[in-house]
Amino acid sequence: MSQDVHNDQPQEPIETGDGAATPTLDEQLARALADLEQAKQDVLYARAEGENARRRAAEEVDKARKFAVEKFAGELLAVKDSLEMAMKDTSSIESIQAGVELTLKQLGSAFEKFAVREINPLGEKLDPHKHQAMTAIPVADKEPNTVVDVMQKGYTLAERVLRPALVVVSKAMDA
Image (cartoon, rainbow, N blue to C red):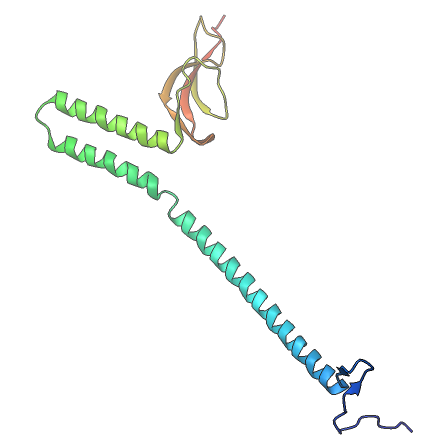
């Protein structure tokens, strides 16, 4: 038979030789349970902080996506305003042309601010990553696959092609 060693009576602190009392087992258990509870709370707090940080980061990414073009769109508003003013001022062809030229400069400035670069490959070798050949024509004084006409300019955004240039390339003369 086993003996029940558990004693419901509070234990007296054990005195050590230097006069300091060693905590009883009940006191040690109570302290260990309190420490465990504090550790559990700390873990819950750390988890909550981690979740909050992930949520905030996801919200920031969402906002960045949503408003990524905000500054660019703001720059384009000036271009739109200039076009609307040009439409109102139809007094002469010269004033309309001057307004369109000014608007084109504003648009070019907005593109420059946001690293939108023009691809105008006239005279260059065909680069299939930046150019799309629409047709090939025989040209006597050009090497084959040289761009001889640009039907539509292309554009890059920070080295990424937004739209390839639509081009006409040379081909060898028929013999």
